[in-house]
Length: 245
Image (tube, one colour):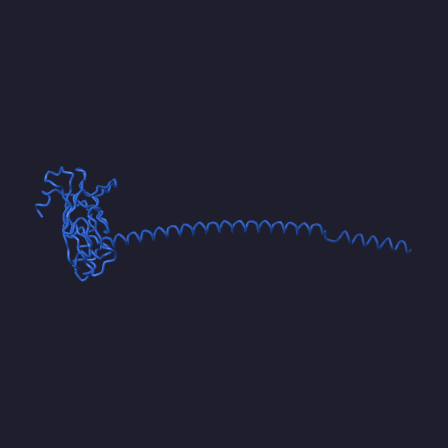
């Protein structure tokens, strides 16, 4: 009787084990969940890397374009300052100052000769100024390659930074298209070929002239005068062009 009871209890225990949920399935479910979480994490990490790379590229482009904008702004400011001369800045109350500035900004191709007050550049940082009076061929035929340049040099300030020397022998005409340079052949002034702004009193001026050899087919040049901003697009005329002035 004892043996039969033991057999019955063992069979019940075995039946209960068969009715229990299979743990292996649960383990498998847990493993699949872990794998899904790992895949999701790797995808999220890749997306983060792409977003970081895109942000870096966008920030680099923004820095580049901002740098270009700053350079363009500085260049424009310098061009405007080169056009403005101390004479126009000293009299801003004059209502015609804006008109004079506008005339200087007109395209040089619309003029055929140097006009009064049109070509003026500061010298020695504004301590003086140089104005072109005339730039013309040596004869009336227009075939000469010798060009006479008449200039007026004026001292503006009491103090002059530096030595104030202006060497007329260093004046050069430049072909703006080819950048070819034509040196001075001769020069004349009351003080010789080289003089200083210190030789002039404040607001005193002196007329000087230089001769340069310019090709016959060149009707417009740039002029480079020492310690002075360059003159751009200066028309070369003949004496017949100036008879109507």
